[in-house]
Image (cartoon, rainbow, N blue to C red; front, side, top):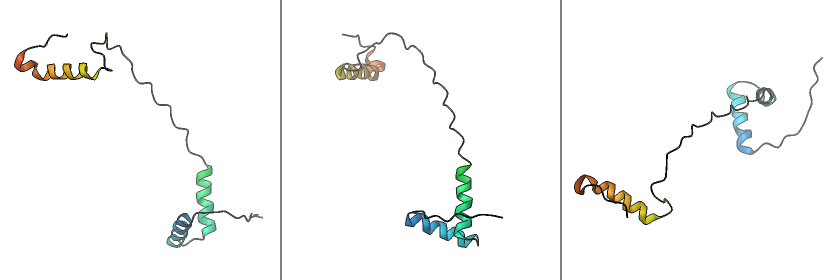
Length: 91
């Protein structure tokens, strides 16, 4: 003998409309479709895999102070003009 439990669920209107539409398309009842979706959800999602660690490496000694905007602009300008005027010496 199969027992059924009756309960009340609060389902947002858009979700209910989608559920009802799918039930009609599949020629089934709301209860059967909701039960199917609940079973699928209760089977659980696989735990997300841990992402692999990103490689780390040493970039060496810092060549400029990246907190100094003027120094960044000076180096960028020097790199842009180097083909025309040769390398620009660091201050």
